[in-house]
Image (tube, rainbow, N blue to C red; front, side, top):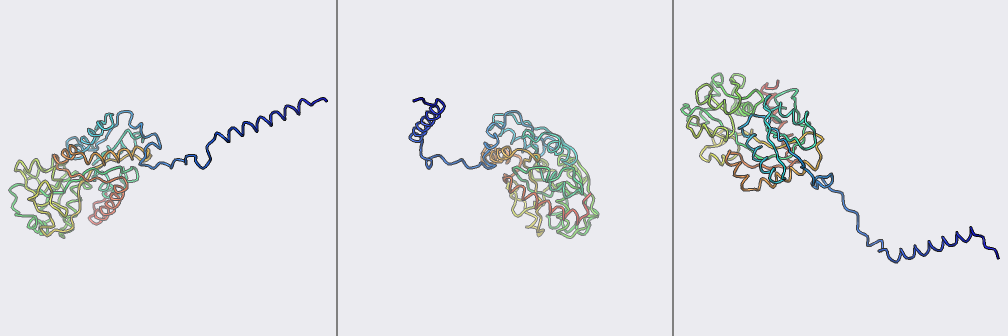
Length: 353
């Protein structure tokens, strides 16, 4: 009998398919025993976007103030720690000017948002800058607040031989003679300006009758007070400490609910009957909008670890800065609340320009 070759080919292919399928079914593991799919990674797991490879080159940490100040010293201590932690150099670059706005604009608007340009942020060039200007060059929404690192206590310093015996007496004198009060600040939206404005508001003194003397910062303003060229300097404890230790100025009080650990013998303003002073100095790190999540996560986690390091804690203590870590979520929330409070104060005192 003649067999159709085409039909034979089809049948052979069919039988071979059945044989292969049977063997495969015997050797393959049951479907129920296959490994489940891996869960999606979160921001805290930098591997999601190649994070383990970051950083692969030098990072620039921009300090928008002159070298030697509190922000600069904290930034340098941070850069030193993270350079060793990550095995890549972190270089501090000072770009001063505009009350911190010049450096902030460079880091947040001119440099690439690839994680290799970080900004050392401070209360002066964030919440106070936004509150003090109707159209600030840099806004909160321009950046990702990554981690807060440290804080400083606000202190009220006068000349060493000033006639007032304490802060209560000084406050009473200012309330009665606001036109005689001269105080130093880097500008109308500076840290000192908000500290003075809040204090005068609390004691009921006329802020508009006082006179601000513009300076380049603590290194310029505290000597002016020591020399009698201004009545009051409001800076952090650390910024006033050199002139205090030299016996050139006297600190009448510090703000906050507790005494400064660096000046345990100096009373708080609240102890002197002046309540409600909440202005404080802080510094941290931020990045431009659009920076990858894994970069933010890596900095956030590394700074949290850094704050627990005894050697780093000592560096902060040496410059009279207290550790005050906050992760990105808490930092962003605090900045928002602070901006609202300072904007209300600046509007009330006609400080907005």
